[in-house]
Length: 586
Image 1: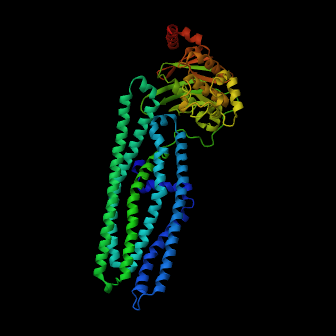
Image 2: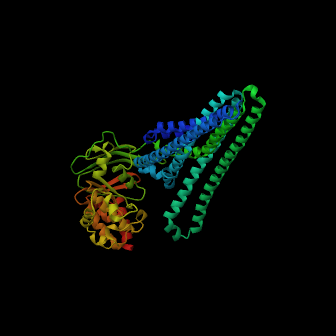
Image 3: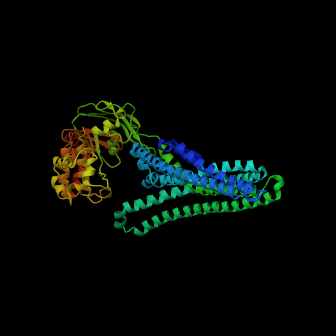
């Protein structure tokens, strides 16, 4: 839908931002005042020439000086008004676009994990960086140029009509023809800028993936093919940008030709009309000044048009995010979870991804409060999707999930996130310290509380082994820590939030043996005394659970404790047999 927005409508959406509208009228009044004072100067020139310099009685030096002082005052006042209005608009642009960036960022956070994962990371980053930067660049410079240009065009044409309507018609006809050509050309330029924004997203995605996947690239000796892929993306961006700049340069050059032709036409027609038609020396001189005042905003508008198209292209992409319906909305008048141990009741649960068939089909299960549940199944059986539905990172296609007797889609996010914690298989860490990463679990806690949390999980020895303990920087995505160490931080973060329901995508399968014992003990302490659902990659977790849920091809096919399921000789028994054989071989 956003791709069909015209440049005017796309940029018009900027006026819906409260911080952009605030004080805008004063800014526009100042810009208009500065323009009006500028347009008045050619009138003063005409009066000075006709009435003071070439008057019948000879030049009037006193009157000329008086008119010169008035013109100087007008010029200073016009410069001040326009400069101040520009500064105000730049400040407004900075505030407004900061608000827009935060709004886009917040909207992305309200989208489901499914939607965000379906977008390329580089493309999403471009929405809140380069796209909005283009808009801010236009508002801070091009926007005021358009305001001043349009007002100067209007006032200049009015002044021309008052002075000499024949010459004014010539100028208006020329400007109208040139404006029509610009209107046609701006559509071509708009499509070119859209392609540039797409190519920027492509190159950012290619670069981001190449940097993130550097270990894989080196492991497989794929430096050459990766460099070619990045080079191709960058070259496509360059080609799109070069074509756009070429079009913009051609447009700007046309303004120079238009300005010269229009000035020459005015002088020629003015001389032909002569004084018999009211074209005095002062009038012709004033008209030449007015033509310059008319050409100047046309040139500015031509130059601004390129910036406006880039901004509109960026705004269309931003609107594409903002206009995407929030598929995981915080419910109005959302309910709070009851103040007790939480149970989970799943009824008729069905889920399908937009591009495929059912991932889960008719799942029915009740998880009593305080129970320790393991979820097992082969890869692609639907167990991770089940976990994400329970914590409402996704919404079910059909059926219901109740936590503590309350439908999960009716629970306010504040209550859900405070009482229910989800620890994914790969604990994501931000590029800050260990302490700050743990603090996401409870922002108000101090370092002493964080140290106590590690102690509660038996991880003090590991913290003491870090270079600067809690102040150790973890690097981007936790790159300075091992997979197991990242998971220890993620588990401590969950512990600090003190959830009543914990959903854990167990992460011991890729952990080195030295940390596995610490990680296992931390998990045991974390889930003790609370309702827990653990996606078990190692079936030793299932052995220690109260009961096991077995998924196969999107269906819950078995449930029961470890011993009963082994005796049943079904899917679970086969999974356990394969796992035990693999463990023995290891």
